[in-house]
Amino acid sequence: MCSNGVNTGQLETMIAMIDDVCKVSRRQVHNLAHTAEDAGFETVGMKLHAAQSLMDDVRALLDEAKDAIEDDAEDAGGVQVSLV
Image (cartoon, rainbow, N blue to C red; front, side, top):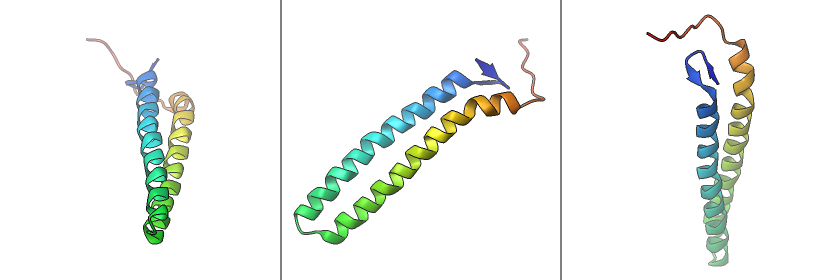
């Protein structure tokens, strides 16, 4: 579906792709945090777990953005796209 010149299907797909990248990165940060902690690097592990938490926040915001696509498409007005 296209709304106000934006293909909402592609927009949703791109958000999902970014979420996939974040999911993989979050998992890598999680594993690295445990590796650091197991090696005695407690502060590093703590910082990496904090980064992991922030990545959880990013993923939640991406989910909210994806959910908002339909609402924004319905509310947006005044833009017309014409084929020439």
